[in-house]
Every structure is written in structure tokens, then in C-alpha cells.
Length: 436
Image (cartoon, rainbow, N blue to C red; front, side, top):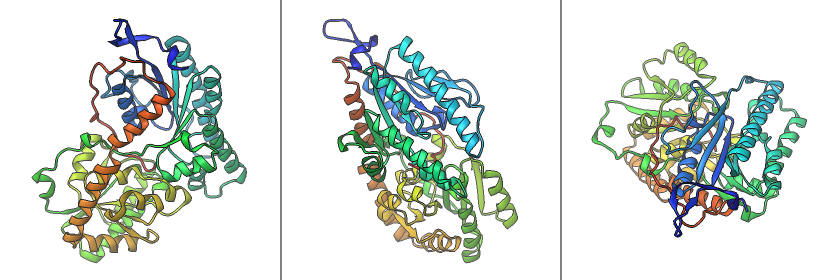
């Protein structure tokens, strides 16, 4: 068993006064630095609190961090990513480099630091050979399914190549089949693991994204005291996020209700932010559309608690229909009603706390926003639904319990192992991403 190879570590003692073994596990994430991935941060804190020792392998952005901010002692082993861009060749180079870096760091962790199991977060879905190597040596492997790679490729490519789609689907299947356990971010992803991935039901566990209840500051009088009603977008601003539709909706909204008494706040960063700023200038919307840039956790919390409505401008695609947008859960956590396209997993998440439009055109969004901004009783009812759904189902506390059950099946904790020092569940974290 993997846990039997874990060696004695600091922290607690067993009943016979020998140090309890604190299993050392690794998490690899390559599409974001660990300090910018809220899901990975929460997973690390949950593992620390349960009694595991954690090391994260991730790309480096800016200064070289050796430990995860806000954690007790989660270590970071980072690497530079010189290959990035658009197109099949640049993606292939990026993925190949990421594979080599993760393989090297994981090998060092296994040989020198006695890592007994690992978790990999996709995309990309190229790490299944490492799963084979780990399992061949009796070590556990968890596949944390963040995104649907074939569908994501289709969203980001004007004319998807069937051969590439087939290759991505094959890699996805291998990633799931060779994992000890699969973690899915919603029921649609779980169904894909059971069908397209060929996994047995007992090997697939749903662990949703979302903040912990402890991260949400208590409402204050200042939150509701504002001269302007506020429509908020919080998240990544890339092509597939269609944030331009939110800006165009603000243009239509200004025509419907004038320019006084409301504003749209766009918080986040991404490759499309410069074009979005240009669109605001071209349309003369600088007085009603405000950009904040990339916000940290407490800033996101303050912005959303002072919001009136959240907007989710993602349009229908196979990717968006089956994915849970992290920003939507962030809205729900603060009791913020959401206006969104009628997508399967969005409706499953928001329920009656959402107002749904058919296609996501600027006119549809503007009409829905205009109606809700004038309907205080409806907003009050939707806020109550949002808060209830978050506290009873979506909060990270519920998800962490399921996540730790997965890890305890893969690496059982020795008797007497426990976290010796508290972690900080409200560690500063970036604005939420677009999906999963």
C-alpha cells in the first residue's frame, strides 16, 4: 500500500510515543500557478488539515514561491513555461514541456522525499504515462477533472480538426482509466467519466468548486448602502468567456434606463482585456463600465457583497453547457442573483437564484438586467435562494468532506496522524476562473 511507504514526519505521536507517519502527497497543476488556482489552494488546505504533507508542482509566474501562501507548510516546486501561445504546435510544445517538468519534479519527490501518491489537475490530459508509472510501483494516482479538453479545444478553435479531437478524447479516456480515483467537478463531468472515460461508478466522486463559508465576510450595512446598483462580472477574460457580451449589454442597458443609478464592474484579467477596454472606449461607456483588474480573495468578497446582480455571459457550447462556472458559485456565496444563458450546469447550480436568457445576446441580457434592477422583491427572493443553496450544498466545507474521503481511500492516514497547526482557509486568492 502507498501509505505503508510513508515515513515518519513531524507533527504528532502515536500511542507508543513514536512519531506518527504523515503521508507525503503531490499535486500537479500546469495551466495556472498554484497561488492563482483557488481550487488547488483549498484542496491543499484540506489535505493539510486532515494530516497530509503536500507538495505542489506548477508553473512559475513572477517571483519564485517556495510555499503556498496562507498554508501551514505546503511546498511549491515550480518551473518556468517558455512555450505559450496559440495554435497546435505551440500547444504541443507547451504540453510536452509541462509533461517533462512534472515528470522530473515528481520523480525527485518520489525518490528523495518519499511521496506516496499524486493528484494531477487537467488540462492537459497528457500525464497518464505518469499514472502508469506511479501505479506500477504501488502508488496512488488521482485525476482531478477541471475541464473538458476536447470541448475546450472546439471552443478555442475556429475549425477544429477531427484528428486532434480524437486524440484529445483518447488522452482524456486514458487519464481516467489509469487513475486510481477520478474527481469530477459536477454531475455532467461525472457522467462523462462513466461513459467516455469508462470508469466504474465507485471510482468517480463529485467535488465542486466554490468558496468555503468561512471565507465569506459577514454582511455589513455598508454593503447595501450604495448610490448605484451594481452589475458584476468576476473571472477570467479570455475569448471563450465572451465578456464582450456583458459590455454590449451595458451599452443596451444605458439605452433602456439611462446612465444614472447603476454601473457594471468587470473584475479579472486575460488575453481579451485590452480589446474589451477598447470596446468600452469606442462605445463611450467609461461612465457606466469600470474595470478593476485581477483581484485577490478579500477584494473579490468585498466587491460581490456590494453587488446587485452577477452576470455570466458564457454562450451555449458543449463545453459551457456541461461546465460549472466558478464565478457563478462565487456569486451564490454572497447571495448575488445571476443572469446567465440557460445552460444545464448553470441551472443546476443557481436554480431559482438565476434569471436565464435563451441565447445570450446583448438585447436579452440588457432586458433581463433592466427588469431585475427595478424589482426589489424579486431580488430579495433570489438572494435568499442563493444563500440557502450555497450554505446547504455548494460551500467548500461540503466538497472538502467528499474530497478527503477520496484521498483516504487512496492513502489511508495512520492512527494518530493529525494536523498540528491550523491552516488559513481565507488565504488571499485570485478572482475565480471561468469554468468547472
